[in-house]
Image (cartoon, rainbow, N blue to C red):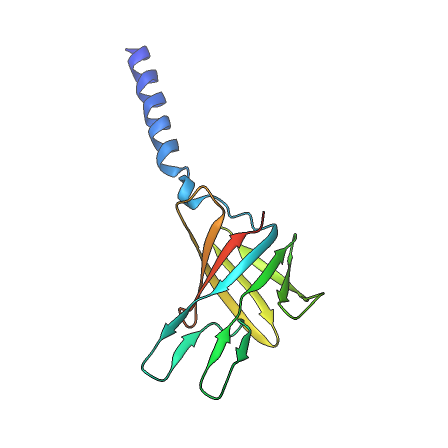
Length: 143
């Protein structure tokens, strides 16, 4: 009888450990290193679109523009944002809330807060969703 009770306790403990332990989809995000960032845009109507304002734009003509990409370089508690025309970039403090998978930082006087959406891929590819607007950035780890 004592053996059966011990066995039940072990089984219950194992089941609880499996249920409480986060799965791989909730694993901690490691952002250290250089990332290529692509800026997605959403067409709102025939004449307007929405995109994340961190993305650099280049005006091509009176009626057209190009949304350019940029690089993010993460170290311990900082983020360096490199636009195409910059050689040094701008380094800002950043806060990664791993439990909620949120990235926060202030750049050029604007506060940014992104949800980190993890793709089911062997490659390091993350989608950042701006919390205030829903605009998306695609981050691919630079190899």
